[in-house]
Amino acid sequence: MEPKPQVKKISLLHKLVASYAAISLFTLAALVISYSGLYSLNKTARDIVTNDFVLINNANKLRESIQAQQSYAAKFSILKGPEFRELYLQREAEFLEILQRLQKSGLERSLEDIAPPYRDFREAAQQLFQGTQNDTIPLKAAAERVSTLLEKTLADRQKLLSEKLEAAEQREQSTIRWTLLLSLTGFLLALSVAALLIYNISTAVGKLKRATHRIAEGDFDFDPAIPPGDEVGDLAEDFTRMAIRLKELEQISLDASPLTRLPGNIAIEQVLEEKLEEGKPFAVCYADLDNFKPFNDRYGYIRGSELIKKSGELIYEAVNAGDSLNSFVGHVGGDDFVMVVAPERAAEVCQGVIDRFDKMIPEFYSPEDRAAGAIEGADRYGVHRRFPIMTISIAVVICHKGSYDAAVSIARAAAEMKDNLKEKAGSNYSINRRGQPR
Image 1: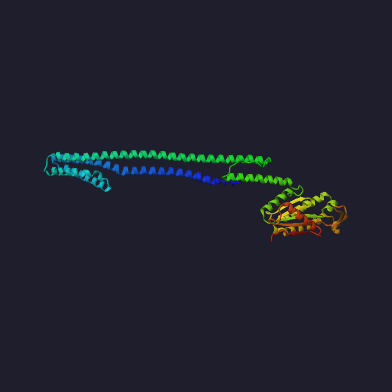
Image 2: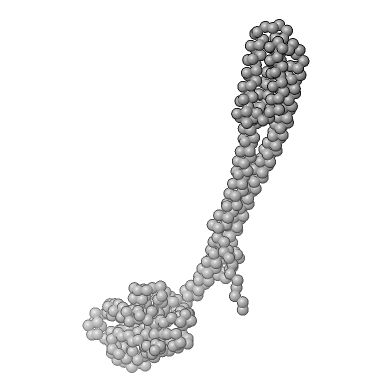
């Protein structure tokens, strides 16, 4: 038979961490895209403000300035007024200052074609001011070339500005689209994960609730049908194991003695078989009350039942005074009890039972019988004789791996020891170590 493949378990915590990691990834991606888009738009805006607007504004100023310079030089050639020369020089200085400022900002190269025609313009104007030339046609022609170049620069920059604005608009739309898409995906993923977890957990809780009702009704074999893989699956497996254990406990309870409430023969046999199968050493202590029948005949079954109950309690206390996890106490029936303990605890437990029993038993006899130290009665064969105050005999069988093949073999060995032990006076215990490996 091939081994059952193990299911790789993914805990609820891992599922939550994985799902929220995915959600966080989508959210982070949306933030990164939003930030990248905003950064790109801000960079474009800064470029437009610091470059395009500056160049366009200064190009307009240069065009206005060249027109004013042409006008003042032409007026001087006609009216010869020195104030026109002064006005011309002011506008010339303004023109040169703008070019110098653009040169420092790195934008002058966009207007570098203006320099040659402007030099021609300045030479023509200088000739007019010096009187060596009275014709304004060269001045006008040079001014038109400068103005044409400035208008071309403005047109090129306006076109470039339009392209930048269009690209910025496209980036803005793309950023908005991707941000909304990723945000919506993360939101839907969060809703899906929450809905799936709620559905799985509520479904599992519902199944466990139904299983609880079925088990409460006695159906211990009911399967909640919850697949393994996470904490809910582990809980279902634990629940199934609990149902199996409850079924075992119910069987033990039905088998338990109604007087002592200790497990009966079925449970005793089951424990012995499990210990044998486990293979570790253990000790079986078979306890029997000596001379119980005469006591029961003299004092009645009610007093006898009370003694059996008290004996079960003191045996249970003695066994559980030490390692109770690996110990067991059962009631075979009547005045017979079984204790299963670790081999190294056998002598201690037996002596503890004897000490408790010998201290308790005188209280069950009348003062006259205690004083006499015995009672009159008939034995099991009907022979009338004296019976001493009751004692307890404990036969201990040490079981090792391979020493006994079944619980019945252990019981048989303990019974033989008990019969021999009961012939001795007083409370005694004897340990059989014949099964101990050498």
